[in-house]
Every structure is written in C-alpha cells, then in structure tokens.
Image 1: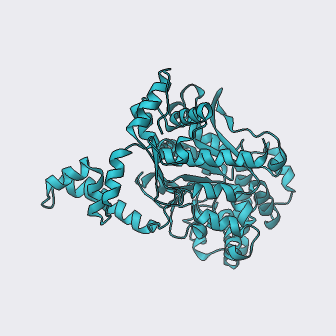
Image 2 (image 1 turned 135 degrees about the vertical axis):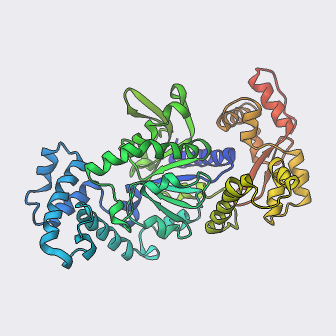
Image 3 (image 1 turned 45 degrees about the vertical axis):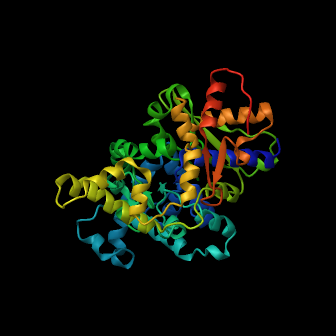
Length: 450
C-alpha cells in the first residue's frame, strides 16, 4: 500500500468517526505541537536552558540527569532551590517585586523563567511567515469541541482566539457540556504560579488526577479524540488512559474514537503502516487505540474539519447559551423562581426541534420529510442493533461494499442520503438500511435494492 492509499483509508475512517458520533472532535495537544509551530524546547532542552541561565547551577545538565536517574521533576526541584537563592541576590532587576513579599512559593522564580521564555517565543511568532502557515490555517478550521493540553505556552490561544483558556485545577469546575475551552491541565505561562514542573508539583497533580480524569471521561466516550504532539511512550498519555481503560475498553478491545497522531519523517516512503497500537498503561494493563503516521499534518486537519459547518457559530456565543441554559435548568427551574409554561418545557424535553426553534433556528419543510424517510445516524443504527458502537456498523457497510461492489455511502439511495450541512454533510440512514444490516449480522442472505 502506498502512502496515498493509506491517507485515503485514514481520511475515510476519520470522517466515519465524526459521522458516527455526530459531534466535533476533542484535540489533546502535547509538546510536539509547540516544538513544531513555536520552536519551543522539549522538556530536556528546557531544563538545559534553565541550567545554563542560573549561575548557581554550576555543573552540566548531564550531572543532574545522572544523579537523579533522569527523573526530570526531581531535577526541576533541584534547580528550583538554586533559582530561589539566586533570585534573592538579583532581586527586582529580574523578577517582579511581588515575588519578594514572603507569600509566594519559592518555586515561583524558576516558573517565572519558564514563563518568560515561552511568552517571548509566543509573542514573536508570525503565522503568516512561517514554515507551517498552511497547516496552521487548516488547524484553525477544525473547530474542536474543546482542546486539552499539557503545554504551558499560549500558542493554542493564538490559533483558536475565540476559545477560553481554563487553567490548572479550574478544569475540574468546568461544566462537562462546555464548548470552546482550552483546558491547560499543567498550567499556563500567563499564570506562572500554575505551572507544573517540580516533583512537588507532580505529587499534588497526581493527587487530583482522578478528578481530572473523571471530568474528561465524558469526552473520551462521546467525542472523537485526537492526541497530537505526543510520542507513543509519553507518560502524560499513559497517566490519563490508565484511569479509564477498564471503563471504555474492556478486554483490550479497540477504542474506535481515540487516535494518536504520530510524527514520522519517513512515513511516506514506508510500504506498510500500522493503524492500531497497544499502549501499556502500567501494572500489566494496556489499551488499544488507532494510530496515524504523518509528516505533514495538513491532510489530517482537513479530515477533522470535514464535519465543520460552512457557517460556524462563534464559540463565545455557544458558551454563553450553554451557561445560561445550564444555570436556568439547574437553579431557577428547580427552585421555580419564575412562572413557567410547563407544556413548552415538556415539549422541549421530548421533541428535538422545539429547542432549536426557541433559539431561532428554523427547520425547512423538506428537511422534515427527509428526516422521516432517513431518520437514523450511524450511531443510532448501532444502538438499535445493539452493536455497541458506530464502528461495527461501519464495518458491515464496508463488507457490503466488498461483497457487492456497491458503496451505500457514496450516493443518495434507498438506504442512505447525505444531508448537506457543511463541507461533507451528515450521513442519514433509512429503515431499509436498518433491516439490511440486521439480516447481515444474523447471517441471512441479502439482496440490495438501491
């Protein structure tokens, strides 16, 4: 298989996942993203920079790596002590005055150095005059439901400028339905005290990690999730996946909506490409997810934006609507602080289109007829057939294509129609499709009537 064929298969799989779950993707962005677009250092080079900057750190970085068995949080803790001593020598010529009021933690000085370095890199970036300008423009079009990152810098805030950053432990307080957030779980360079870098920071983080993982579980179950900028052996991925593997992946089953995008400079010359990968998450446990190898990420971003409406609502407006609706439903409604039309509330709860009309979103008459003839998404088919996931319905459709030469999803027909809502639209399926798939999974003979 050449690389173009591999790309075609991956793009089709991503589109099928977006179609199946009928929601925007979640992007989990790691250090590789900042290294690619911001020329930021990786963790080891960041520590080397810190060692070279502080005159009280007198030995080369290799010495500390050796004595601490390459435990980077412990090395950062050692460096933090040196920076705290140095800071009181140089004073306000290098650090803000408020750091010397006796109330700041002594690790604030090393965190200030990190924040200053990253903020300078971010302030100098010019998306229009860089190697990856086209990739950045394509990434902007993805419109993810939310972004989760372990990066400190504000690169993502610059790319997704209508998204709201949520920093550190504040992630736990965000309502799970919230749209348009950048969740910075390891802190932000704009809030140096929030940065997680030392061993003590990580001890505290791991105490709270289960709450963050519980918060993210809804995303892992209900959205396509793409890890970008992480290596296969990244401890951040393992730490998050280890808390949820038994819930979302019993018996090492493939999780069809989680992808790891892995950078490979040689992928286009490789004859075969892995599509799934088993990641060890500790204590003889592993989790199986999909993997995508790429040198250029533009085609992946194109696939991710294929389900984005051509006219998108500003994320700030969506967040405001969600916040007001949530507050109304959870507080005002249950307390009955205002007189309500309970018949209308009942209709909103029971009928899909009533709330949309209340928000001023009209539905065309021919759309109502189309929904009656093709009422199911691929996820709804999976639920009706008790197949667990859209992924298995997709496999049946692939089998039909292979056995008959007829691709149900490639045209409007008796079984399927493409409802145009964005670049790609939404695939809807008829009762005839439901009966056809039911026959196939029951081992019965079938004949197409397209």
